[in-house]
Structures are given as C-alpha cells and as structure tokens.
Length: 99
Length: 204
Image (cartoon, rainbow over all chains, first blue to last red; front, side, top):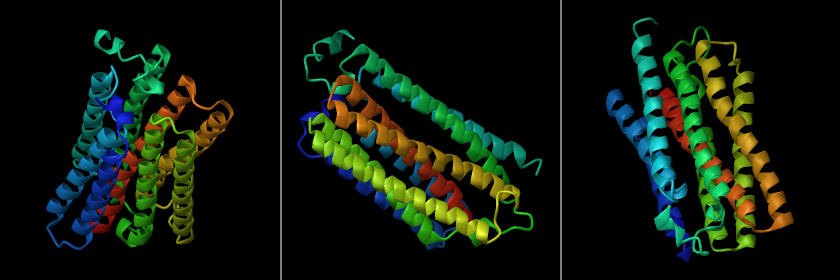
C-alpha cells in the first residue's frame, strides 16, 4: 500500500510519473501540430493522452488509493470524472442542435 | 479499520496518525471531486462556445505554442517537486521538505507570471473578455485555474511559515499533505486546459 512509501529511499514512483508525463505532453503536442493525421484521430489521441496523464498524477503523485479510505477516494474521483464527462460531452452534444 | 489498527504504531505516515487528520484528508478528496464538477461546467461552456469568435481573433490566431509549452512545463515540474516534498516529509526530513516546497512555489510563481503576461499580451492584441463568446469563456476557464494557482501559492507560503514555527507535528504534516493534493490537482486541471483549449484551438 502507498502509505508505506516512506520506506523507499529513492522517489522512483515520482520520477517515472514525471518522465511519462513529459513524454505524453510532447507526444500530444506532436500529434496535434506535426503528425498530419485526420482531425478526429488527433482529437482522440490527445484526449486519451490527457486522461492517461491525469491518471498518472492521481496514482503516482497523489496516491489516491492509499490510506483506509483509499477505496472511497478512488470511487469519489472516478465518479467526479464521470460527472465531468456527462456535463462536457452532454453540453457539446445538445448544443450542436442549437448553435 | 481493524486491519489498519496495528499500523498506528509509527509506521503510518505522520499525516494519517489521528482520526481527525484522516477525516480531513478524506474530506479534501471529496472537495476535489466537487472541484472537478466546477471545472467541468467551465470546460463545457468553453467547448460549446470556442468557435463563436465574432469579429475577434480565433483560437488558432491567438495561441502561441512556445508560451503554452513553457507554462505547461513549469506547472508539471512544480507538481513533480511537490511530490518530492511529500516524499521527503515521509522520510522525516524537514529541510528537504522545505526546500522542495520552496522550489514548487517558485515554479508556481513562474507559471502565474507567464500566464499574466499571456493575458496582457492578448488584451493588447484587442482580444479581451468582451470581444467574443470564445474569449469570455476562455478567460473565465483559464482565469479560474490561474486564480486557483494564486490561492495555492498563498496557502503554501502560510504552510511553510507554520512548518518553520512548529516543525513536524501530526497537524502540520496533515496540512502539508492536503496542500500537496491541491497542488497536484491544479496540474490535473491544467493537463485538460493544455489539451482541450490550447492543442485543440491550434489544430482546429
């Protein structure tokens, strides 16, 4: 469990998380600006990269699963992301008929 | 709880030692869930309106890759150094904790400086909050995030002062841990601003 992190002597988890975040940031930048892929493909790729990077923050840096309430914390964040997807995707979908 | 009881003999990190601290941390996670919902409404507004540019500039005309990348790297690195601060705290090293918190603060201040310069630059180009629906929703979304970062900087300064006065206690450890959760969360929001505002704006 993450609560025992203080036994480690070197912050491997943080360094791996940071390096992966950098790779994802530059990969998303490349996909958007220089890959020449179709727009829809680009959007899917950069959104997937963003979700992966946000998960890295939550699991590698914030240790969302640690402590006795780890399960509640994880469910709480998963539910809030579900709400976010419903609000954002739902708004875009419903407003395309109006605007 | 039963399984965890035997770990309260000192092997549990300082910030989880008291029942009050554990509830404070859980409560803060629930608050972060509410923050996700708040930012979701701002993202929804922006994504519905960002192509309504009226007579003002479009996202593609306005955004500069270099500036956005500098802001992104500053905030991402500050989130990393904030993680290192907690790592040092759990090793019981106050000096290491303070040093990394200070680095985090400086990187956060650098981020805010670049963001304010970016906003001023836009306003000088005639792209103000009143110019178009795109710019209204842009400034509200990115500005709300910037306000959060500014608050985080002030909060972290106060925590550092308290650490200097009181050192490690279950209370100060819990406060440091909670401000670190807040700081990482700001980077989570920025990842989506980077992707859905800047990258999407430059590609469409």
